[in-house]
Length: 423
Image 1 (cartoon, rainbow, N blue to C red):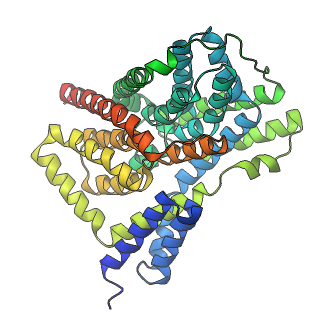
Image 2: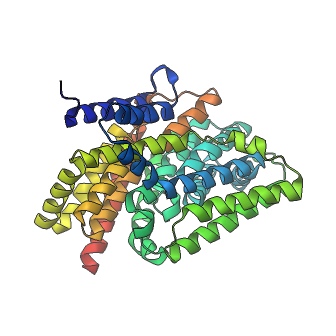
Image 3: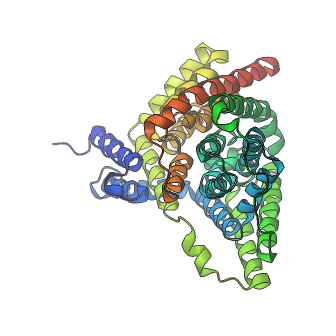
C-alpha cells in the first residue's frame, strides 16, 4: 500500500476538515486541525519542514487574531458592548423596528472595526440581554449578529481574518484602494442583508418594546477599553493605508490597552488572558498546514491552472463565477480553509485584481447560507447555547437561503460593474 499517494493526504485533510466542522464528541476544533496536521507529518505524507513552512505562513494572521481577541475580551469585560447595545435600545424609543435598525447599525460598526468574530463573540450576549430587558423576541435581533458579521466583513481589511488569508498581508491593497474596490459592494451586501432580514422578521419586530432599558454608565475601565478600541482602529487603518502588515500593530495595541487597564484601574491581567479563546490559533495553524500539503500534492497548481484558463476565456464573467462558486464552497468546508486554498490558487494563477476581489466577496459573504460557513457563525452558535438558546442547522438555512443569495448577487454585480467601468 503506497502511503505516499496523494489520495492519502487528501483523505486525511478531508476527514480532519469534516471533524473541525462537525466536532465529533464535542472535541474542540483545534484538536482536530492540529491532529490532522500531525498525522500528515508523522505518517510521512508531508515532510516536517513543509509542515513548519505552512505554520509560519500564518504568522501575521495569528498576531492579528490574538490582538483582536484580547481587545474584544477587554471591551466585553468592561461593559463596552453592553453599553453600545443598551444605547441602541434607548434610541429605539419603544419601536421594535427602530431597535432592529439600531442593533444592525451597531453590528456593522463592530464588524467593520473589530472583525466579524468580535461581533459573534461579544456583541451577541449583549444583544440577548438587551432584547430580554426590552421585552422583545430575541431571535430576530440575534440573527442580525450572525448575518451582519459576514455581510460587513469586507468593509475594511481588518473586518475579517479571511481577508488577510485570501489577499496576503504584504500584497494587500492600500486602504484607499481597498475602499475603492469594496466600498460599493459592501454597501450593496449590507443593504440587501438588512432589507431581506427586516422583511423576513417583519412580524416579530413590528411590536412595541420597552422604552427604558437600564444600562450602567462606562466606568474608568470601560472608557479605557473604548479608547483602546478607538486607538487600535486608527492604528490599523493607518497600517492599511501604508500597506503595513496588520498583525504586530494589532497585538501591540491590545497589549498597550491591557497595560493601561492594569495601571489605570488595577485590573489583573491573568483573568483577561484566561478568558480569550486561544484555541483559535492552533486551529488556524492546522488549516495552514493542510493548504501547504495541498500545494505539495499539486492541488493548488491544478486549481490555479483552471482559474487562469477561466479568466482568459471570459475576463468579465470570471470574477462573479469564482465568487459565486466560493460562496457555495464555504458552506461545505468553512470559509477559513476555503479562503486559504483559494488564496494560494489565486496567487499562483496571478489572476487580475477583479477576480481576486470577487473571490474575497464570495469567501466573506457566502457563509451566510449555513451554520457551517464561517468561524464567526460557529462562535455565534456557541454564544447562543451558553444563553440557553438553540438554533438548528435547518432553521438557520431557512433564513440564510433568503438572505445570502441576493446579497451575494448584489455585491458581485456591483463589483463586476465597477470593473467594467474602470477596465
